[in-house]
Structures are given as C-alpha cells and as structure tokens.
Amino acid sequence: MNFRQTEISELLNAEQEVSIHELADRFGVSQMTIRRDLSFLEKQGLAVRTHGGAVVAGKLRFLQGVFTGQADSTIKQSLGKLAASLVGQGETVLVDGSSTTYEMAVQLPKSAGITLATTSLRVAQALYGSGIKVLVLGGFLRDDTPNLYGPLAEQSLAGLRVDHLFVGCDGAESRDGFYMADLHAASLEQAMIACAHEVVVVAESIKFNRRAFARYATPQQVQYLVTDSGITARDRSNLEERGVNVMIAEIEEYQP
Image (tube, rainbow, N blue to C red; front, side, top):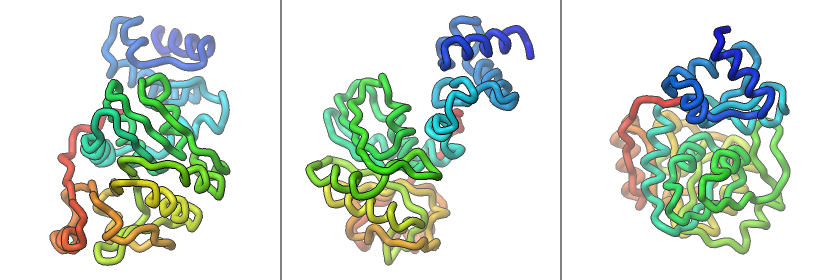
C-alpha cells in the first residue's frame, strides 16, 4: 500500500465515505488513479466501491448491497444513457430495482426538475443530494437485493400517476411479453404499469427467448424497449408489429 492509499484508508475510517472527485483534487491526481486506489483498497477489504466513490468496509453488510449491487456492464450503462434521454424537464419517473434501470436513473439530468419514485434503495442512495426529488416507496426489504416489495409497496402506488415507468426483466418473448423470475416482483411491476402513462423496458438483448417464471406485461402494454444491437430482426419486427418502439443503444466505453 502506497502513501496515498494509506491516506485514503485513514480518511475512510474518519469520514466513513469519500468521493472520487474530492480525492482527485486533494491528491492532485487523475480520477482514474483514484479509481485504481479504491479498487486496491476494496480488494484488501478496506473499502466498498460506490457510484462515484467508496464507503468504509464493514460499515454495514446491508450497505454493501445498496452501494454495489450487481456489476454494471458497458451495455447496461449505454442502455441507461439512451433510456434517460426519454425524460424531459419537470417530468415524473417511476423506477424498479433492476440493474439496467439503475443505470438509467443515475444518468438523468440533475437540474431538470425531475421527480422520481422507486422501490430501489440503491437508486435512492445514488440520487441523494443530486437535485432530483426522490420518493422511496415502502414495503418489505428483499433478502437478495436492496429493493422493497409486497402489499405496502403496491398500495403506495395506487395514488400515483407518472409520466414514465422504467423496468427491467429476467426474460422476454417478442410475441408474448416480459417476465420476472419472482412472482412478488412480477406483481409489483404490474402495479407500477397501472400508474404509468408510458412504460419503458430497459433490457439487454440476451434476455430475449428466455422465459422466466411470471409474466408482468404483454408487448401491447409497453411503449418503448431500450436494448442493444444483439436483438434479432425477427424479435424487433414482432415487437414493432405490436406497437413497441425499439431503441438500439450505441455501446460506449465502460466507466466504473
């Protein structure tokens, strides 16, 4: 461990969390150098990487799930960027707990007067202090991901009406619809659809021709699919015939 990494570790212990931007300014190095330092500290068990920084390791096991989630890929980031372009000034957004919609949420414009509701604690944490007004919907906390679900979450949606709903999926069939592996998750997605003016599915092309346990939407219930160029011509045609606008993201360089 070099001197700078030692200093960062001591800052983490004192302040509990640090940001890449502030550390780069403090030590007069590039943000890429700080990312490497934080990756090293994470491998040593001294830090947990977050979107834009790190928190001290061992703060809470729960927080590790909130801050890290699944590894976010180049494709997911690119899908998220394209999906975020659908949101306009002052609009309202509803976001589920999938990794692709997380990437959409963190790329929303921060000074556009957007209001966002979500069942994802990871999304809520990432948008803390961003200027986006965030409503966290109540419910039971899942054991496997930092997302909320259940009757309370569904009931809290009853009085809402949003401009855009962004959802992921565990599987999709271009003629049949979109699926979740968990029945509770599918039920929550259905409740979300009921209060949305526009439904946007954000999913990698590999999710197609993979049917999961519970269908939550037919193609006719979805206005947009944001995906990558791996989607087949047949699947795209099937969706467009059913009224789905298919948007293909240009894959950009991954920025952890």
